[in-house]
Image (cartoon, rainbow, N blue to C red; front, top):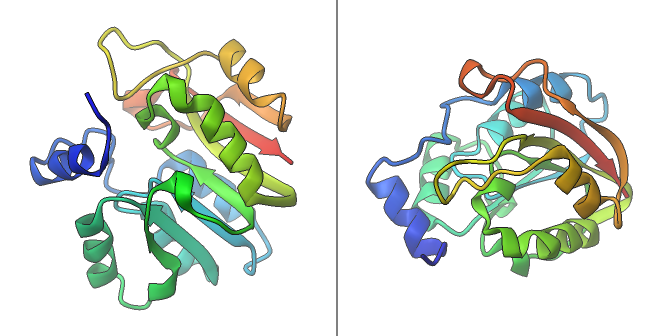
Length: 192
């Protein structure tokens, strides 16, 4: 199975989007609510319907960028959110983008990548963050019975994977997961 743009486009076309909860997830909203600097340059990779971006934009964040390689999803986002800056909507493969960001938000992107891409993900995230930049979000803390996506993992695996390139500030059981994910998510803050 090749998890390319065609694969994900088909998932959207067939409404097979079990990861899409229809709104910003509680852990991300809670974290965003405590951010004071509205000028932070923020990236949301593998954004899908980009509820996190809508939430941040509505809270006055001016430099939110989204990236996905499913063109129609980005087009739909633009139609539904005409005040969101068009130049901040990036149609590309995450691994091909460039730039430097203060904050990158992880929400169901990592678990959509095949596990052999995880080291590349860590390196790419590190390269996209400014000094003192942060990668923040949620990761599954479980192994799935079926072959993914989603692909799960464990706290021990994530510690081993990320600690070579990030300071692990927080990697704890998520206290405010949505009900279907309760007990199976870790909230994390990794800093450059």
